[in-house]
Image 1 (cartoon, rainbow, N blue to C red):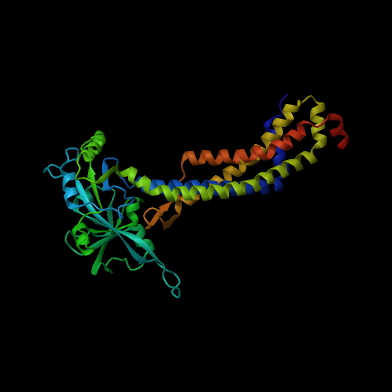
Image 2: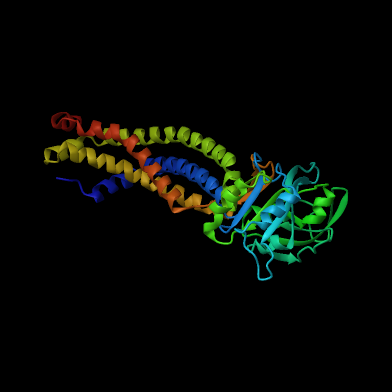
Length: 393
């Protein structure tokens, strides 16, 4: 015979205080576990979504970031001439030759008495074609910069987090004054953490004789392999070509791995406490229900039924904590945080992201804690002898 689920759930309700305390501990661990995975997923989504599946990016061989890269104008012209590159109706190659540099800006500070912290912000020089290759970018306040002018537009995350970047303000860098004329939104991608201006003007100001990167649209999605082969066959091209999405995914790897390692280590440490709490709760349940266990055995319930009942009780306890922890973690999606990307050494803003895979992994983690914490008390309950259990009562 099997014990009904209602009987098992009723036992948890009878011990409401210990149930709430134990489930609360598990909920906290699941919250931390889910938050770590959501942080990593949000970082990856922000950077991967930055790239377009139809675009490729060329940087100098051996360079890990655009800031470290250098592509000469001659090499950029060679890339433009390759047949795998898409062209518009006028026959112009859909190629954006860009310059990317880092500039330190003061962050907003609510405490007027404290000195403002500074952080690196990428400044990207973009030609008109670069705007066409980034359809997700749209002006939400002010206007776009004019080609050939000392004007810049700032990403939405930069506008929120840094001081002195309001429309009408002027930023001083590269021995010039740059007028802020607009704020753009890039759909919660890494571009939101950048400042954009005219490519030629920024290249001249920073005394760059070449480009940091070349972004190009493929003539067809299948043309990537042919493009890579064409670049490798041209000895004058010392560049590496990647799909734009792959490039930005690589940019997230170092920081994402750090967040995952640190977070999972903390989760494992916290989970030990939750498992011990679940075991104590279940041992206490066994101790207070010794006579009840003996009665069930006398009524004909097998040892495996007693074992299964206590295991299910522990799993229900864990499931309750897991559900509460996941529900709390889901509210983190409304929060945007910023940190320094280890790969580019620039400030990057991103949000927590809940996915079905994260929800499933977090719930499985909760059930695993419940199973480990409940197995020994369940075994103890199932091995009780009928006579000894009834006598203890």
